[in-house]
Structure formats: structure tokens, C-alpha cells
Amino acid sequence: MNGRNLLLLVLALGVLPSCARKGPPPGGPIDFSPPAVSSTFPDSGQARVPLDCRISIGFSERMERRTVEDWLFTRPPIQTSSAGWKQNNLILTPLEPLRPDTTYTVLIGAGARDSHGNLMGEPKLFLFSTGEVMLNGVVTGKLEGRRVRVENAMLYMVPSGVPFRATEDGIGRICQAGKAGDFRMPGIEPETSYDLFCFVDRNGNRAYDEEDDVLAKYKWPIQLEKGNESVKLPAWFVADPKEPGIILGSVGDSLSAKQEKQIFGRAVSTGDSTVSFSAKADTLGHFRIDRVPAGEYSVWCFRDTDGNEKQNPGEVFSEKTTVMVKPEEDSKAKFPPLPKQ
Image (cartoon, rainbow, N blue to C red; front, side, top):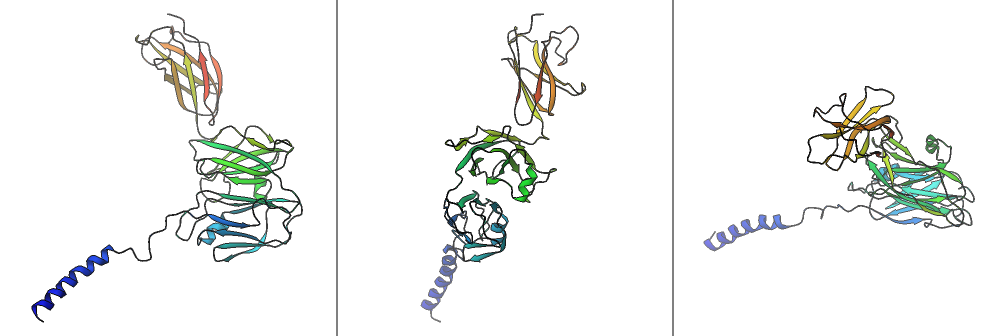
């Protein structure tokens, strides 16, 4: 091999590995995009759907089919022989004819994944009716978690007085909150009283387990009126009933903030006087007592003249007030200035 050919060979061996490193990874770029529902049949909002209709849900890409089937909910329940797939479309064939004059809810939950493992992240819900008209009542709102993650929490509406466990038999309506806790519950019948439940599935098995999960009930029944079939609820604070609560208090102290005598807030359980908590007030007279178990408490303030952070005989204290501590909301107590010593 002459010198010129040897030089060309050396240059080729040096260039080829460099070119390989600059190329794209095998199989193209990695997919991190969430999948989405691209089509439904029947269309959302469609009425007069035939009783022998098959239901089809199309996705934007290839899905991990088991997760879609796990996160598919219908109300009233639609029993199917099996879930069939045609490319990216899930096709449901009911075992029995659909109910006449009925509004159906179909929910694809946020836990469905594509073939690359990407979560949908946001739920998709659509309605159709086998009757001439559809139930157009809608309840919207926003969940706020207190030491509880309410992202993608499940929500159920059942006729007032019906226990939550009845939802396992397909009673009532269903929806799922989005990542920010916003929810929209359509298909509500006006002039009917409903109870609204929020279910936080901590163990991820899509079934309510009293020991592990959080179940909250909205504090008032909800009833829509004809002609006013949409209601937006105020922020709903959801908490684990087993979690402790917070007592917020304030006192208008008659001593200046520069003086050494401190003000303390104190809470004692009305059912067990050995259960008590204290917290120092700030210079504005505000105090916060954290991690207080749920229940009824007697709350008052005292001026800690000897600086031992305990209430001793002879120290000035306020009148007592009773508060009920709940995990889902702050309990508040306000006191007038303490008398001078």
C-alpha cells in the first residue's frame, strides 16, 4: 500500500466513528408527549343514539391497552363482552341494548398510558343520550388539598342519602379532577338533590380502602333548578379526617411588642384535659397552634410574665372560648386585649 492510500485509510477510520456519534439515536427521538382522545362515537352531546350502538374511542397514538381498559368508566354501567381494538381505536360492544331515554357518561381517566408509558395526565369525559334530550345539568368546582394530593381525584354524585359504596354498583355520576384540581360533573338531573363525594385513591387500585384512602363529602346537598342548570361551587378544601387541624388565634395585647412579657395561646381538649397545646403569639398578637387532633377544644390566652412558657397562678389570662377543630378548615379564635397586670 503506497503512502497516499494509507493516509486515506487512516482519515476514513477517524471520520466514520465521529459521524456515527452525531447521528440520531436508533428508532428516532424518544416520545415524551402525553396521548389524547382524538375522537369518540357517539359524539359528545349526541342525542337519539340507537340502543344497539357500539361505542368507539379513538386515541392520538398507540396506547397501552390494559391501562385504557382499567381507566374506563361508564355511568350507568355498560356491560361489554370484551374490549376490541382496531389500530388506535377502542371499540365497546354492549352485551345488552342500552337503556332508552338515558344520558350516559363515558370517562377515560388520567391514568391511561400510551405505548411509551406516557400518562394522559388529564381525563377525558363525554356524554350521549338514547333519548330525545340530554341531561344538561353541570356542577363545576376546584379541589384544594390540605396535606392531601387532590390531583386527578375521583368525584361521584349520588342521590342524597345514598351511601358512597353504592357508586361501586354504578349509581350516580362520575368525573375526575384535572392536575390543578378543577373538575366538571355533567349529566346532572335538575330538581334532584345530590351528595358529592371526593375520593383520593392513595394506593392506586381504583377502589376505596378505608384504611389507606381519603373520602370526603361536600358539606351541603346540591340541587340544580330548571332554568339554572349550572352551578360553580366555592373552593372545596379536602383533607384526611385522620389528619390533625390548625387553630389560628389573635389577641390585642395592651403591652408593647418591645416588652419582654409574651402572650401565649393555649388549647385544651374538652374531652381529655391531658391533651393540650400552646403557641407563642407574634408581635401583632397572632398565634398558630399546629397539628391539633380533630375535636372540641377550649382556647384562651395568657401573659407569660415569668418567661417559662407555662401558665402559672397569678398570670393574667383571657376568657375561654370553644372551637371545633377539623382537618379541612382552620379553627379561629379572637380575644380582646388582656388586662394590665
